[in-house]
Image (cartoon, rainbow, N blue to C red):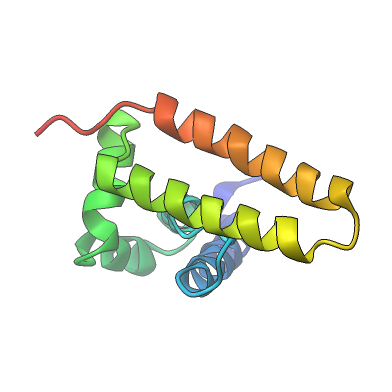
Length: 124
């Protein structure tokens, strides 16, 4: 299937991922960085205007450029993500109706955190 026929799907994915990323700024446990990176990936295929805006953004731009160039995540972002996941884990442990429900969520966040810390830091 030609890329032009899928362009609308990439455009939709880019905007949905960006929306979820923005919600993740204020909702503990919902990550911002992966959704912004997904948005940039999809925008590069479906909306050059959105992709250019993301790359030029004061907060998101450096993060996206580091990821695209080196597959790297900055130390500050790693620490912030770890702290937010830890806070979400505490909330889940206290609020989950069954222990195993919290355990599944905490295990998923631990796996993401391990993966995140395995990524290199940007070379300057």
